[in-house]
Image (tube, rainbow, N blue to C red):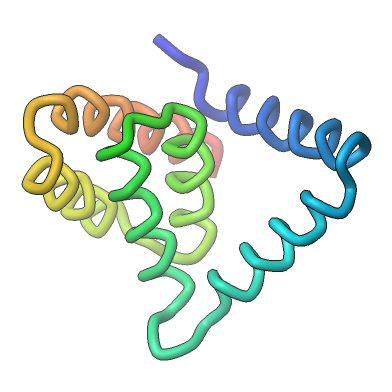
Length: 114
């Protein structure tokens, strides 16, 4: 079983290291992330839930850790995250069931820290 909070922290550290080597690229990525996730016609919470659904369907463990964390930080409830997992399963089939289980485990681990 993955330690998702630890995985999240290692992603943050890795992004900082990449930023030291390719600062323009990571600065642009960071700015794009900030502007895209900001409240607009869709709330930040809704955008994080969309990102989580995509992370599940593309089978990205690190993205699942990142977006479960950020969805919770944006105020998403357990029920909203579980429904997002359901939509990902609808769109991604069997493999999304497996990664949906990973997202559910990440949710449980981050909830313990809250």
